[in-house]
Length: 368
Image (tube, rainbow, N blue to C red; front, side, top):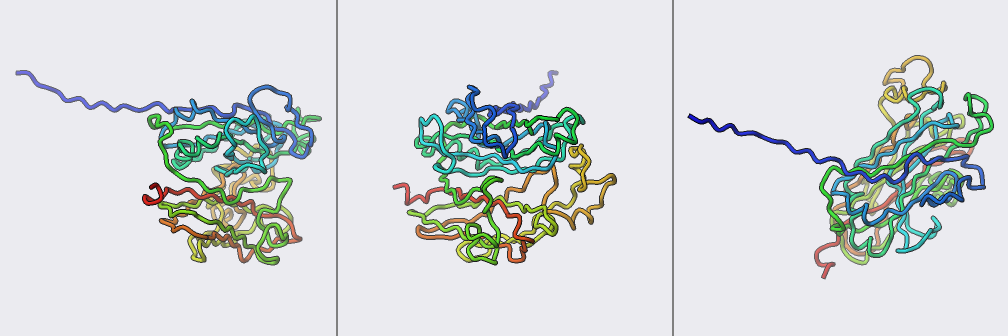
């Protein structure tokens, strides 16, 4: 008697990866001269802290309907915690370069570097940001017919402390290395998305400031209040609207907003849609990356209760990317307002870098 044995096979798709930047070197963010400006490596260097490269259609076509941004930062000659981000610029098709202030841009991800001594391992830290909506943006046939996508990797650093404190850094001005990879675990999908994109605000660089605070007329609706209203008009109804918000608190002066957790409120068309207090429950998982002695981690582990009473982020951590589902929206004027009513900004220092963009689908009757 023959017995038929049923076998079950599991097939795992290999991840498709697009390497955007590979160990590019960033330099002193305050230095006006761009160190590697003459390199012919396909990278547009807007400054020593922000680099861009065009995403080619053939690479975009390899990506599936999921997406993870993978950032790897290596230690060089900046041993402090700094802010970095991944941005996407929508540049007129065929342009060889662009001015950042003249095109639409969105921030996709934000992170904080650890206090790293380049001579001590681990000397690299990895951040991962999964978001299938990023894939939909990159697969949008409409957007790709009008724009080239340029990916930006931004890491602002300065070498001055490391020049004195880190062996091998005397006289150097290289601060970090950085890599960016797009990772997709699903089958290639091509330009099959109908998503619409509406950039509202993107954080300004370390040098420019005036993001969100209560003391600059460029950074608030009303002096003395930490409120920023972003108004926009839709010329047709949309469905499945989603707002993506990235915000982090900075200001390391005594009593600075970096160290104080405040209630953050987000309103859409005057209705409260998000209420949160930033901060991590425990920064100990990031201790291993903070190889440069510093006053934040100290010599001994801290309890979750200690960490919960301190700071809005951990050195070495990613900043949360918050998504707000807005549903279906009619044509017309709308507004999104971000408010931090209790923020103080001691000595008029510090600010909250703010980025917001909307993704949405066109309503069926708007396609006719």
